[in-house]
Amino acid sequence: MTASSPPSLDIAIVGAGAAGLMAAIWAARAGAKVALLEGQEKAGSKILISGGGRCNVLPIESRNPVEASFHSSSPTHVLKRFFKTWRLEQIQDFVRWDLNIPLAEEDDNKLFPESGKAREVRDALVQEAEQCGTTILYQYRVAAIEEQDGGFLVSAEDGRTLQAKKVILATGGESVPATGSDGFGYRLAKKLRHKCVQTFPALVPFTSADEDLTALSGLSLPVHWRAVIDGKEVAQGERSFLFTHKGFSGPAVLDASHYFLRDQAQILVSWQGYSPQDWVDYLQSVARRSVIKAVTDQLPSRLAAVLVERSGIRGDMRCGNLTKGNFEALHRQLCHFSLPISGHRGFAVAEVTGGGVPLESLQLSTLESRKTAGLYFCGEILDVFGDIGGFNYQWAFVSGRLAGESAAKSLSA
Ligand SMILES: Cc1cc2nc3c(=O)[nH]c(=O)nc-3n(C[C@H](O)[C@H](O)[C@H](O)COP(=O)(O)OP(=O)(O)OC[C@H]3O[C@@H](n4cnc5c(N)ncnc54)[C@H](O)[C@@H]3O)c2cc1C
Image 1 (tube, rainbow, N blue to C red):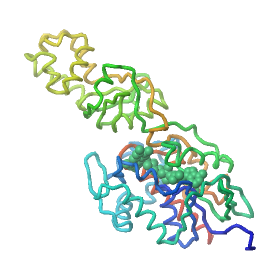
Image 2: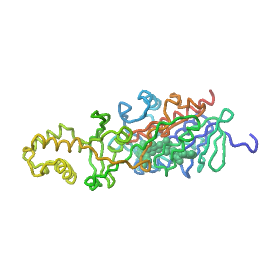
Image 3: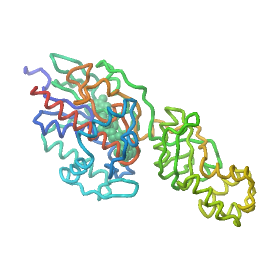
Image 4: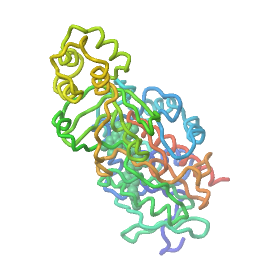
């Protein structure tokens, strides 16, 4: 190296989020000289705000099949193979024993740090990456990556440059751009010959112009939701639902959101998560009760009042006196309620980005690009996202480890 030539290293990882930090740990553990380049003043800004500041770091158990938790335009057999490379229990052990974070189980299949502090997760990842020998360069906003002499020349916005034999792009998607992931990673990928699957906000709250429902803001209850296209159910789930002053949110809505946004599905809910038959049995068992009393006995009274009014039935009618038509109208409100959605809250609040760099453009066993040798990808920049519940960190960790370790191993190949 001459006095004027840029610093040279084995692997430059762009983006110090969950995926980039994990890639750095495994690349450095495998003996590579690694620099982690982060555009922001600190690493893992998104980790700090995740899980309401508590970081739902992983799920407790995997769900079967894989498409019950992870979404991609690639076929499920492609997705499946990644999760075999580092099983959920092994990642949980890594978090507990390598990162030294005691974990606490919570309802709805979620694991959080026992401390209840997302900062503990971020700090432990940074500490482990540095202890393994990674150099983290902050406020190093990568503006360009060019192929040069069998490797790459990486240039920052402020004019700094470095040379790397391999590059891992871990720049995240474009959700909550204030955290540093503003979609620029896709531009870097495109310059290096990658096409991207159209991106869209996912795990995003809905807006609604229905004032009777937005007036229920703050009300939360379990629901069973179904996404329906042309009368056919394409997805379903059971989770909590929240009325907001702008529309609808909560895990049920976030999980269902991409079916509305991407596939124009109608989203139907059954309140309290009861099945249609449960509601039939219940209404028949309370024949002498008034409709409003019967519904209020099962649902919050403000919601019950809206639903009974929308069914067109007088609330003081006895359940046993309902005509077939009355009964069906009420039943529709209770368990096939079509959410009046007018839009969504967009990338500003979406928890993740759908779409991105397609898996088919990568070697699936290593996450190395098929278009540009020596370039690797991991995390949310890829066309994969998970449901609410720690699945997105599972993806960031699995893909980060695979890309980091593979890039390091390729140095000696
Ligand atoms: C409000 C909120 C709550 C969430 N809660 C959870 C949760 O509890 N559990 C869960 O599993 N998931 C959760 N998620 C999703 C999860 O945080 C993300 O899926 C995950 O952080 C993605 O990791 P990543 O490393 O791929 O990308 P990111 O975390 O977005 O990291 C990308 C990094 O790259 C940097 N970068 C981007 N461009 C450049 C550039 N040109 N040069 C240098 N650096 C660059 C960014 O500054 C950023 O630090 C939540 C998301 C949000 C927004």
